[in-house]
Length: 173
Image (cartoon, rainbow, N blue to C red; front, top):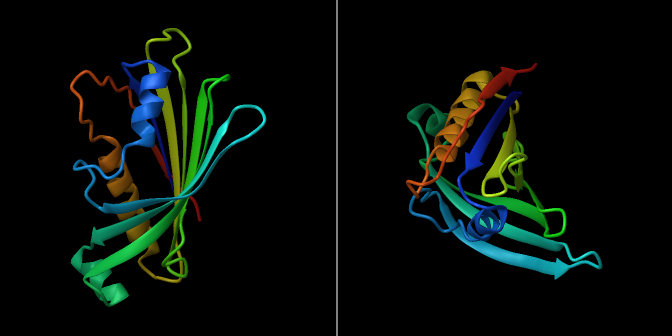
């Protein structure tokens, strides 16, 4: 199992960052996400927006992974659940893969909150847990996937975006 953590500070207020986060796909900065379908969206009695989306992704795979999986490209699907609480100014998003689950499990959690010292900034805490199953090169593949998540997290489309990153990776057996 590989656990990856990161913290980013955006130089924009929470409302602005949340609007951008809800519209982040499709995105030329991450062309692997090829489709987004909203499966369900509702507002609960407390005014929180609940969304359930299906992301379609297609990854170009390294030669070693292609050999293991027996394919050159893989279309995968990810289910994403998010809750936006405008009163608490918190957005929590959880996603997990729903294809290739016999080989790999990727669970990601993102939490957006206003910066505690500056309301004109927003903090994103991101965690991904990657588990490769039944493959002798599991640790290699977990590290490869963690590096891909880290690389995608560093892509910033706006020069005013400020980032403070606390990167923490650890492997657990």
